[in-house]
Length: 296
Image (spheres, rainbow, N blue to C red):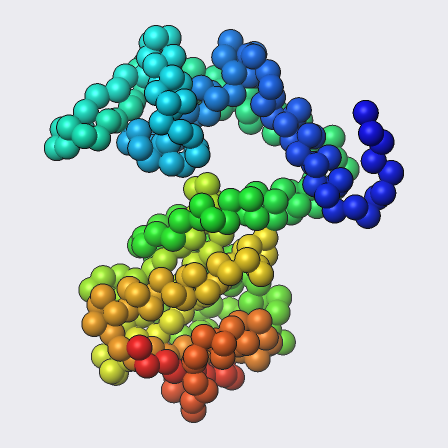
């Protein structure tokens, strides 16, 4: 084995990371987590158990070719863990679902995986640093698969993002931040047909959000743009803004406004890059000191 002695070599360090994760995850084990089958079928079972039932969607999500997907499904069917059938309204689509035996196996994997994760965190004297590093890695490796979905602003995934956003504002603004003192939009104003609320999901975990607040003033407002620290610099904020503009056009909105605070230098620089124009103050919110408009 070639010894890796250059502690600054990014390639060697990345390959070491790959080997560590492969070994820890049991990617080469013939009995993943001791349940009698390798990682491949276990991941398919996990994906179905987490709510993905369309076979084409599962294959795309896991990055599998059709031949391997068919073999993995057949093996799980032979074990009596899943069933597959044509979709009621489209015979070309196949749907997979867990049997009672499969649901029990899914639960067993969940308990074992949770215990494994707890053991990994317990080894590290600084688990918060380890978690922050894992968040960055997971986001970077999955950034192309990050989904942007429209949900209600009171959905738990939305409120999780908003809570993190408000906490960060309280830390970054010289005045602190109390959401009840801001011009906080009503939830109904960020729902169709007036507006929208978008969340970015990385393997199901919310890592960013942005809201579109409808008004009766001839424009709509962009509100609550936030991305998790682990996702910054990867283009996610721009993707959220691009998708929000598309949604605005669908709703027949052609003029957008937003406000910000000069402490949020990265956001203000992005707005300027995206073609937003600085304008005079248009609201009485006590926190913003920068105001922008964009004509779609």
